[in-house]
Length: 176
Image (cartoon, rainbow, N blue to C red):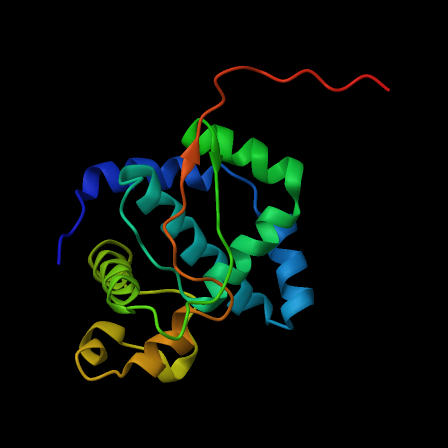
């Protein structure tokens, strides 16, 4: 499993820390019924996920279910999300929701999740936003079944790699 360069990732993470996600965290905490501590943990996992994509935009990382839920909550704050994407990626960080097709080959998603776990453990001390039964993921990945990995990753999304589009022109508001 390829481990990312720690210096580049640290610099990206420092940039992500400059983004205020408190409003998103509070919204997610209320909407999902998370404790304050767990909401902060998921927020940190989301920041790590964003950092990885800043360093490797084509990394095909797969977030945990709760980190993905936090991402959805960020997207719901549309102006803030667009502004934050511009700061971090120089354009919009797209997300394609949906569940994997039952007949679909799950190996790319499982590989993306393993990549996420390996880099999270190497650089951030472990995966955040995972309920207790999935703690210590890298040791368990070799014995985990597809249904376990699906339970962690695919609550809402198909794991399709997000894409970043950079604005080639600025858009003027439409006149009434």
